[in-house]
Length: 539
Ligand code: C2O
Ligand code: CU
Ligand code: CU
Image 1 (spheres, protein in one colour):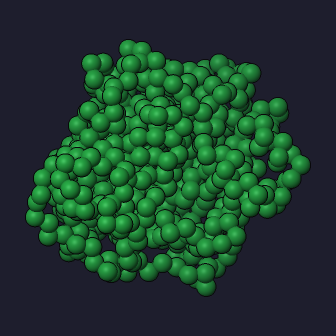
Image 2 (cartoon, rainbow, N blue to C red):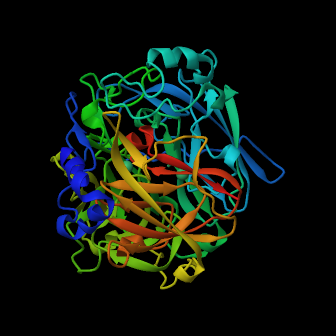
Image 3 (cartoon, rainbow, N blue to C red):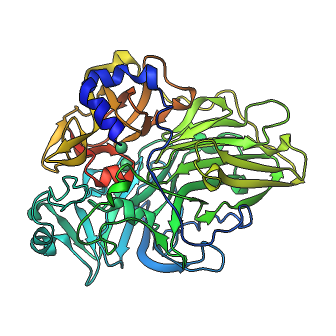
């Protein structure tokens, strides 16, 4: 870490940006610190890939689908022969997959039966502020811990504002007691879903504790479908497979391992100093299973890949590569739904919270081939592997990938009514290292931008480290990366973008849907918990 601090020390902000050509991404492949498991780890590619259960509406009246999910602790067998306590929506990790139609309102009642408060955010959703899962808008379980009630006690315990003893104090505790909103046991989140079909996901967003709470399992898929998407001849049904990739570490007995300063997740927030850059596990899970295997037909599959890791970036490739020399993956969709045209990639870099909708044609391989998804950014044998597909049979395949997929109507530079700059950076505050945006730690009372509803703005995002930058509400197009054009993998509507060390990424964001308070933040969950968030207000 010191290398970033010292570099920034004499180069300053613009110097840091200029440095990108010289250091590129070679200085820092890693986006966090490796936490090793103490458990015996299974042999890769032995556990079958689980497919999360689908959420079913409990009532279906007046055109709105009503769902109810219960956040609770449950035991799961993640490493064969051991037990892991997960905190899951309906007690499962990943939580149930919601499949809902664009334009049809969904109301999701989230009932909290955990000992800690939660806030549920629909990532990629165009949602009114009161249902957006703001970090201080909490559901508190019966008899569970409530920061609103316990704030005074908590402040004492932490030695007041910003005090974190000798630890990497990070400017949390900026939230004053009166600012909490609490809901008793349950909250109805209203999702109008007046948006394109896309692979969204939902996860916990509790102030200061999203990292550990997502690590324990509070995340799931939320798939929005529409007539346009369904009319395409893309692979569907059993051949439309959501893949939630995330890394974890395990204690000897099988419990999740995480370096929280307070493992009870009620007192001091944050992680041990060594993990300030982010927590990386040594086990790669897909849909909650370690290095799983899926038996597939020799046919096309649509893989909806989500990186739900706290801090780990992956660059996915297929091994072996397709024998016919065609691109390993054909991307048909991004965070915000279908691309205009399919784009072929041999490597797919994916940072936390990004989604890639990829078609892989296993018909290119002889039956009997084992096709392994590998991660070229892994730092250990285990983290270089993701999962395996076993091509087991010939099968009919009526799917195809059309030349034109959709009309995403992305904004162009001429649409931008103004330009703003946001710098994501670690700074020093009273001797402690803090993650900041434009030099500020998160303050719920402050906003850094006030875009007008219905307008497009050019936002320039610069950084000192790997920061996957996410905007709530607003979807955007990436129009510049470093000195040049965006990468091929930046295509389409996005809500999260991989900003690399000493790089500036330009996005054109459209502020549509609702007025009010929203947030932007780094989606490295350790950075987010350490206050790398900011409000913007749509006016
Ligand atoms: Cu997926 Cu505010 O986050
Ligand atoms: Cu979000
Ligand atoms: Cu970050």
